[in-house]
Length: 534
Image 1: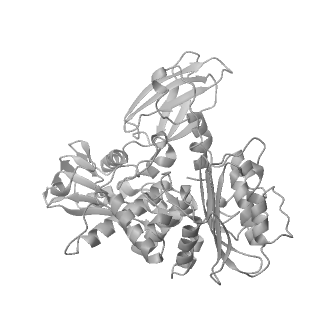
Image 2: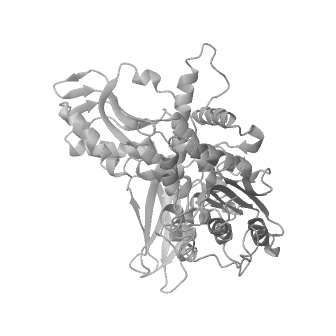
Image 3: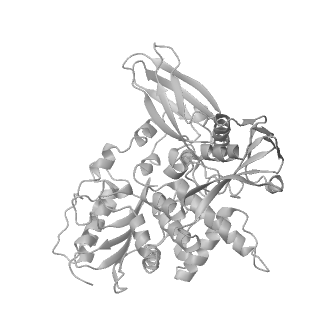
């Protein structure tokens, strides 16, 4: 996680009157309301130039040391590596062979695997499957909506009207009636809906949505809470998309004018029911929140059912789902593709995942690489055993890639594709070695442009403005509570191309101190200002 996403992990438990909830992790929704905004005051403040004053007459190493040795970092851990891509020389290290938590800079490992194992020009299909029983406009079911890992359905221009595209194609085949169920099938990924190491407290949050081979609208639901017309009435809840949450228990009440709002939205991990409780003051403007959709495949099935109806196709069965560890192989036997939509290119999905630190997109890319790795391995006379999930196959493929790069297992311990897991660990030296490898590949320029650009776009849009690092640093950000990281590329004032990894663990800024992101930015500016060619 990073940027505004990182704030979500710093959310603290609210005081509840219900003792049974005190031991249950849940999303602090008042903070979620802030996170739902395009950008908040905290993000805008990060646009300011770093405030720390460093003696510019000192050598680079002394300047960085001066920054990281401040007393407020006494109990924190810094890990830094800076290398020249032009000469291969190491310009600076600090605890560069120690393991650090990575937050979303772990996405660089997923990017390397994606570009190594998947064609950047390839696309991911979402298919409608059916048997050959079409007679006089009637199709003998079931009709299967088969997701194959596209995370962009309903969220990208190419797939915005995906359900109508499928319904149109089916109608053009002459189908008017489906005798049977509509089955939304996401078993293409043989994995749980959450990555390894994801924390329960995050699972109803918009930044930790379920991973699914059949995803829709980023697997997020917008919740709008409005007061009733008079004190004592129930608050009004509205959802977009409307079918995203199957069951809602609304105990939110309308309170007296000018009273303090206390809006709580809680869904237990693995449950479908959203509990809304607390109060909202009468005449309060509508409050907006973003939450995770509990069952994206079911939502996709419901949206397709509605699209079929719009195109004159009636389904006389129900919307059903198939999830791993259920198998749908026998269900799909004898079927063929009767309609299909294509995702944006894998390269475009990766760019969105890196620029905006989109966890769903990056985890799906890891799993797509995992499905390919598994298929390739099954061609061997003696295929490997012990890799049960698609995620495990993806991590196996990543480990093989890192071995080829020369990054030992002891220096990089990655277990999922997003950085949400605190068990993702790597050394700064491993990160700069990875960055050096990426910079030497034919796709280096493409990857460079996929990264957030300081002061310009992505999660660095509001950082490092009005500094030599602006429109210069291309780097992946990473932040969660007590974890702050920045890793990528910068060109020094001397024209030297550098790769860097800056990791700060076990640190929350004390009162009155700059934000941790600005502390990292100080070092990025020092690198951009470097006027000697090392």
